[in-house]
Amino acid sequence: MSTDRPDAPTPRVVPPGGADVGPRSTPATAGTPVPGGSPDPAGARVPVAPPVPVDPPDPAELAATAALAVPGVTGLHPGPFGEIGTYLPGRRVAGVRVRTTPDGTSTEVHVVLRLGTDLRATAGAVHAAVRAAVGGDVHVVVDDLAP
Image (tube, rainbow, N blue to C red; front, side):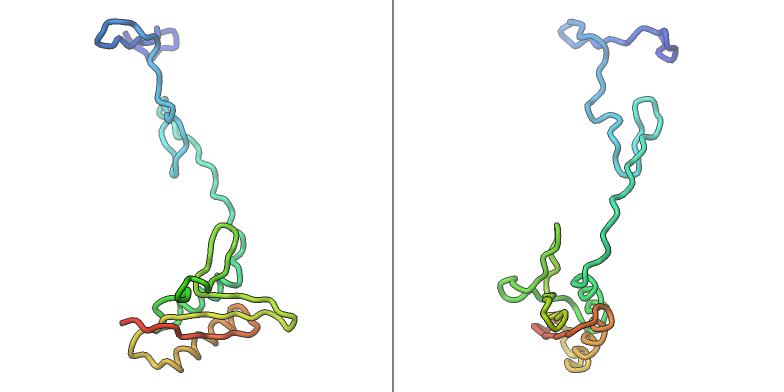
């Protein structure tokens, strides 16, 4: 019996007990879109929803990216109790604190530097990079050294 024809009878599943349970059912996940698409039972590709557009980066994210791009910076430091950070919708930028004051924006960046680098020169490079990325007052704090 062939199921390629539209008028072909629906196959039935007979479990070991011998009771007929009706037409073969497909799993609830069949045909569910997955990243990259997935084949549905007929073999066609199921379209996948386009990615959700990301909001433009926040100044805290720009400051973190700029600081991490400086040679000699191994990471950002959130403080001993994790208190240094900027909270954004659905995420947190640890090690960067952005404050808006009546005089403008102040960005505080807490960095971890590689042991053996010139601390003052690297902190100056972090300052220049963050200032170019976000503007305003920039304060760089070297919190730790890493091997």
